[in-house]
Length: 549
Ligand code: TEU
Ligand code: CA
Image 1: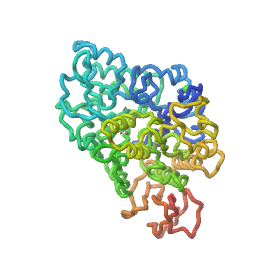
Image 2: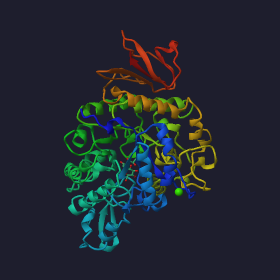
Image 3: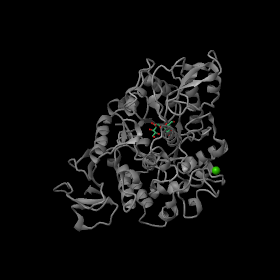
Image 4: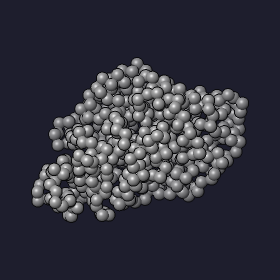
């Protein structure tokens, strides 16, 4: 199996708008990130992934790009970017940027031209049809086909109507993408995270979806299109293969059996993907605002299945939250009484699983979901569109607000909580672009840095241990609990080391650990003080990792 830096690294995702505001306008920016590079170095991460920082009208906070070669004015200048990149490299870290090329902004000059006339040279940069050829629905609500006045035709948008889908069938568009990739690669960045990359090749037979089962349509119709792998191989040939960089594809709709087509060695496509197996466990047929319950055995099943599917030939990146999903401690743990214990337990999972871990900003503080009591305080287009649709239909808005508290993307987009001063030290402005989580007085970076027992230092220790322990990186994996509904236990091993991981996914003490017999167990790390009387019992949300001595 290939041994390489991006398998041995840990990613930290920054959502720049919410990370740190250096100039008091209420919006995080690049100089704000520069100010915190030593903080990130202290934590011990290797790769910074920045959500998009390119020029954008911010319909979807930068995932709608109007100039791929310019820095968003609110975030700073190209000089700030260059300084950020060299500051990252000077500290021995790497920088990965977000490549959003399934769609552009409708304010991109390509689209401005494209919509002008049917014979405009840019017409074929997007998908135009005289009539909607199918019933596709957009992720952010409503129809995926939008009527456009100037030419009287419809264009495709899988996300908001300000995010028209690019037409990869057109070789000229593909060359534009490879060229903008080379622009950033030539500046010395270390790779790309690729937004909804499985969606770039469209089914040109335009099949209908089952509108009652949107979640299923993502996999069966939107993702894994007929020319996808041809495009990825071309992208590799024309851009990526000329640089020592890493790629991670965001891969909603990619089932395990197709994974190694994307990341298998010798495919010359991507290095890793982020799969959505666990992230979609609580999505009902109609999507995220139609939540259903999940259970721990399904969750474990996802990790097992993906481990088997990837095998020795491929690689994945492991994440438990990001800028699109609830806070990990709120979603998989208990963000009340056991916030600290469960946040550390989940950190243990993230950093002892096989695959390159990706930490989302604020997890190291144990940040939690937020529950605004008015839709007015929400900023996310996905949430606001859902609200507008519900209002039009006369649906129960209080019920929707509760669902938003549970699944909404703004749960993870409230400002980073740096200290206990007003607005959590994120900004000196009176009002940040989105309100801070009121729990910032207790939960903030200043507090965790002052407490040797904090979540922050637990991450720091885990990061260091992982780096020193090839078995935790490359070693094999197998689940060892037998379908327990509170315990997730697994073994990681290679020829030099063997580890047993026990994770209590419940707020009760639980007895009956499947400990290996006839070997000497040495405690490797735990989120509780060791206590021999608990040898066979895990305390609430306890994580315990043993090494075979
Ligand atoms: O998300 C893609 C994706 O699949 C989303 O629909 C995701 O499932 C959803 O946000 C969860 O509610 C990517 C980006 O990560 C997201 O922030 C963008 O809004 C989206 O693409 C469009 O660029
Ligand atoms: Ca700012």
